[in-house]
Image 1: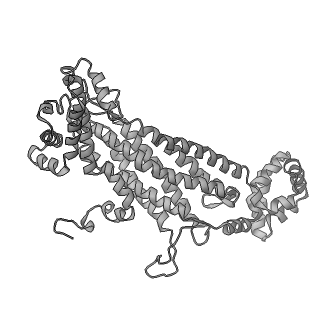
Image 2: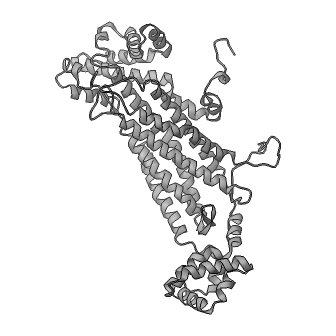
Length: 477
């Protein structure tokens, strides 16, 4: 390592060493948009678009001049800008001063003309977050969603105990359990894609009223639209010195919704890996170690890690809300806090990539799922017995069945045995079952996994629907 290089392990943020090493390709791609070098690059794109539009308005833009303008923006380095800022104590004026030095002399008067600093900064931010979302975050989330869809379809018929409050409820299928996340994450992806397309820019000056550009062009709003169209953006509906903060705020809030969905999925997968449950299992490498002292351990640490990242980053939403507030036309109370939004996106990407890897290597233990259904016995059909009795005209069916479950627990008899001992109950169950599913109680209550409602059908329907919707998103990205 040369004397000019800095060790990766001297970085203060875990994002820049631990999580970078675990997500090198993703973070390298993300840094194109969200690093400080990326920030300078996007700021220059905005200055370049403004300059080209001025030259076009003046009727002097030709191909050679356009090439010179674009070449100058490519030549500026963050080092130059930061060295200049040490003198100016102003980031955008430093950027402008450096950019001017690289430009032909005849175009220099037009640089930054009519703009205020936040015209450039907020427009660049819209570009950065739009591109980061559409080129890194959404493609990653689509991979997670595709794997969930695949699991929902493949496990649509796999019997599993449904659980509420950590207790056995009624039977479902594992595919249906996964379909919950197909639906929840899929809807969040749809919203994120929509919001990422609606980030806005501005070129309306110091207080947003087009004061400066009104002195330069006849139609300042049309001029603004032409500048922003070069960047693929629309202008905000109203501006102070700032773009209306809600465009980015809504995107970040929906990103936090997706983060919570990933954390919830991680929790479910973690609990299903408990020793006494063991219905799924994360992949475990041949040389991987689960504990420094207990060689047998196979901890669900990846699922736990997703939850832990969510705990670290989800509370930052409070700061996103705080940055919504700016006094009158603008204050600087978001100048530091807004810089850390990039860390939030990087933390989300680390969690989403971890979940992608979990799902890619997830083992489904169907035998354990069926075993738990068998161990739960007919009592998991207590709901069915109550409904069948009510259907047969028994108003007190819920209490009858509740007592039957207690009797089964007290005596050690099966739920089916207790039901069969009451002739009236048995006859009503037999009659109701014959009319509904055409089965005898002995058959129905002996195989609880068959009482699963529309779980397999809904799993497949949701998988098909969100597969179609994800196809549409991929076409737009």
